[in-house]
Image 1 (cartoon, rainbow, N blue to C red):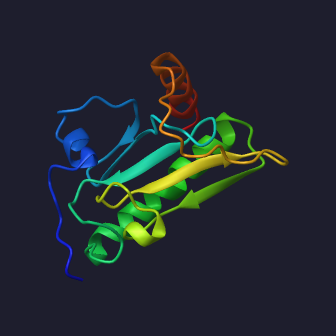
Image 2: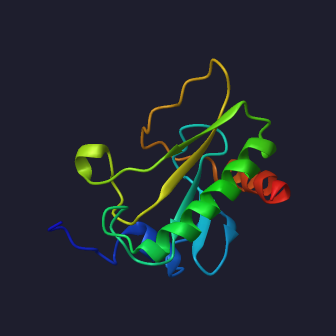
Length: 140
């Protein structure tokens, strides 16, 4: 791949604490926080601490702990929101829809008959994000 990792991306800045986030979980390998433009109630992002542009260039030792964290967060969001299911999404390069070039996984609780909201650029009320984060933390 000819693309390189840019450490000024928004998730790298969140990892360094330069930009605030509503965190729900963190360990030595990942952080998980609320998506500020959620496609559904409880939309959470799981972001490895190790720098990589996406799945295509991530070190294999980054992937195992990342997927384990995705599984943990998926179970918590399903429980926290009494969801019928969970959608996990991960995008690689612009043609796939990737817009932030740091590996990350979307974890979205899903409900029968309820479509995902478009990724419109509309930011969620920070108080709603905080309340949703507390529900997830309680389910962890």
